[in-house]
Picture 1 (tube, rainbow, N blue to C red):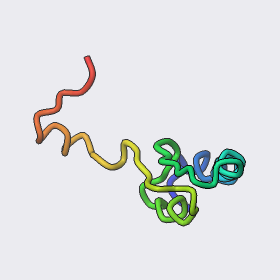
Picture 2 (picture 1 turned 90 degrees about the vertical axis):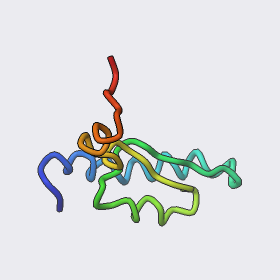
Picture 3 (picture 1 turned 180 degrees about the vertical axis):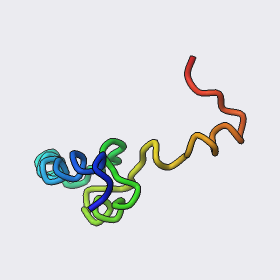
Picture 4 (picture 1 turned 135 degrees about the vertical axis):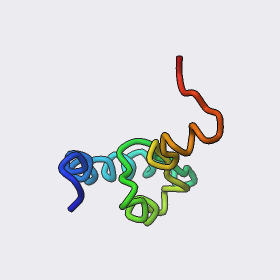
Length: 75
């Protein structure tokens, strides 16, 4: 299991999967791109769902990466 901060996210994963499956059931052609609650160490578990096209989140670009490319952030 990940760091303590990851645990609530991991505990909520089954509920997110059930919600996604419920939304996908009447729309089998729909694909989802979840961007919240995806742990950087567990994107494969979300991508294993056939209804998921891609995943995203703030973990994809670190603060250092953003600053090195001239992004100052909001505000």
